[in-house]
Image (cartoon, rainbow, N blue to C red; front, top):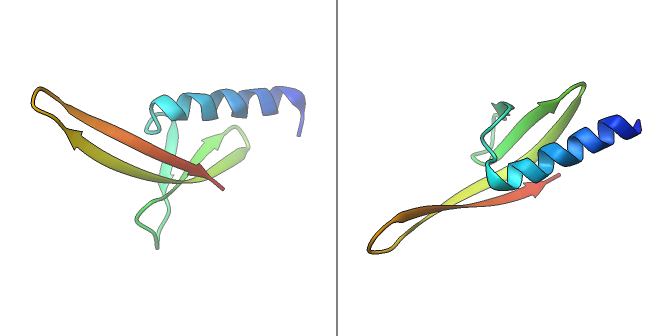
Amino acid sequence: MPSPDLWRIEKVIDGMRENPFMGDLHKLGGSEAEWRRRVGSYRIIFELSVAEQRNRDSKNLTFHLQIH
C-alpha cells in the first residue's frame, strides 16, 4: 500500500474513534453491527456497537469500534 494511502486510512480510523458515523458508510447485510467505510479505493470493514449511558443530568453514547 502506498504511503499516502496508508496515512489517509490511519487518519480516517483515528477520526472514527471520535465519530464512527462520518464519511462514506454502508451497513453490511446479515449483521446488526457490521459496516463498511470507503476510503479512496480501499474499504475498512468494522463492527460498531453503541451503548447508551444515562445519568441524572445527561445522556452519553459510547462507541465500541472493532476493525477487521
